[in-house]
Image (cartoon, rainbow, N blue to C red; front, side, top):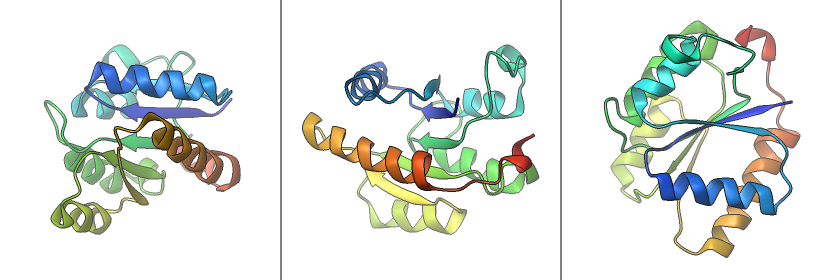
Length: 146
């Protein structure tokens, strides 16, 4: 089973994502890191995330930018500097529409940049397309994450 890592500090946004995935019958496992440092710990199998059976490597990362402890930009920079995660798909999933954030994210190696919407129906369509492309259709070299 493929795993999606959601890096999100807002419990309401996490709950909404869980509900949308359930409503869309998306069966992939959703793992959540509540801040930037937890995301790095999860990916590096450190601290509470050492058990890869309980915390498998993700197939794609949905990364918010405005996070406690370490920003999404810091997480992305760490991932792109770490051989094992250099090519792991990262979709920025944030509320920022700022051109400087979009440009900075792509320059740092983001694969896509999506702006969250408060419209739950539109958010559901966005998640469905995101899932279809990045999880169903996109081919990822999983040998890099072993």
